Length: 345
Image 1 (cartoon, helix red, strand yellow):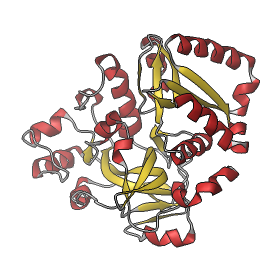
Image 2 (image 1 turned 90 degrees about the horizontal axis):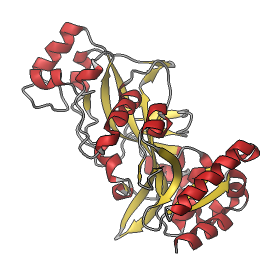
Image 3 (image 1 turned 180 degrees about the horizontal axis):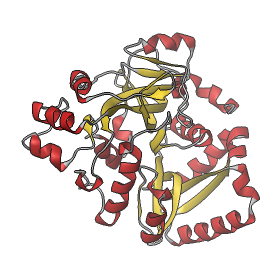
Image 4 (image 1 turned 90 degrees about the vertical axis):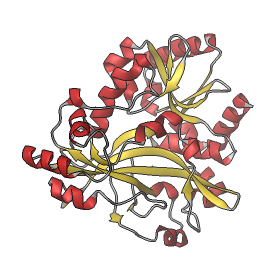
């Protein structure tokens, strides 16, 4: 999709920075950071693995775990947890990139998803934690998963001289080894940060997104912007010093909570949890919910009527709804930014 002309006004901040940088982790909601923390080594973690490892699991499998998976003949897929960033800022001589989405991708060779045995996992698992982004996907499209090449240990900073858009780079945060077979009922989850009423749905969708073996190359969305127009608007608001949260669920009770693993698309969750809607961008303190609607959405009468009902419910909760079309974002991004900034001021 063609970028709005407005982006040229702050183009330096949306290009790969001129020197090494970090991700601004605190801009990622706590629930998202907490849910990603266990993703290393062999996944998913199971009660059986804890038992054979003496209740202490590490990134590198123990001899007992190796024996367990050898006996089972389990195969593994190497999965990358990939971060995209929308903007960067300089804070106390440090450059911080603002995250805008998280995805998981399988390792492929000649277009096919690759499998390996436990011996290979044991030899690769002890990679150590990265302090910098060593591995990247170049010309990465997070929505389709397409990219031009994967660079291991590349000098991505050198790309800044090419004026490469920051959003075109997928930064590998972590890799884990996904077991091809496991008992879903035996999966051990760390979900103390998830409200009790949501745990069942979040676990179901976590397994679907993170632990279901890949049959083909694809990018699975975990958190963050879901379209170019959302990303353009996010960049505009960041350039103004605003910090909206991405993808928040709002319930019919008026409560709101961070969305994760596309849980809002879960039919059972939508009905059982009394979900009202999901805001693309949300300002929890100011209670402003922003919705980015596509052109087709606005042409359908039933969608407009549904939006009106949702808007009315949100206003009753003291939440200000703001709806903008993709066309508005592409043609007059600055005006859209003005409108939102006025609402949160």
